[in-house]
Image (cartoon, rainbow, N blue to C red):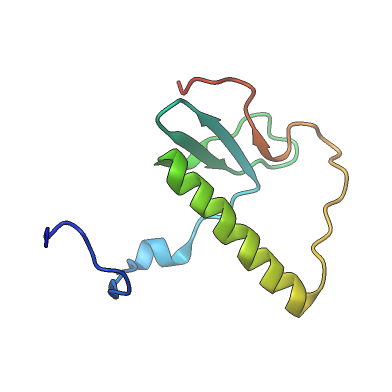
Length: 107
């Protein structure tokens, strides 16, 4: 068997560094894609501040992006079953929130 392929059910130990464990708060994600990859830029916007800096960028394959979407859907269903529906209020600012970009290319 190829050493680069992991058999199904194999446990993976994931290390979480102290800095990463603190996390980064984001209230805006900009999602763009090319034929080969999805790019998700996480940022935080603050009322009254006209500029925001990308805090983290995740680049992944289309397949992993779809798997992430399905994992989020599953976890949201579990969350809502336990804590109630997550309500999304109409945005007061059209440029606020987690929104897809209209372009097809990644810059």
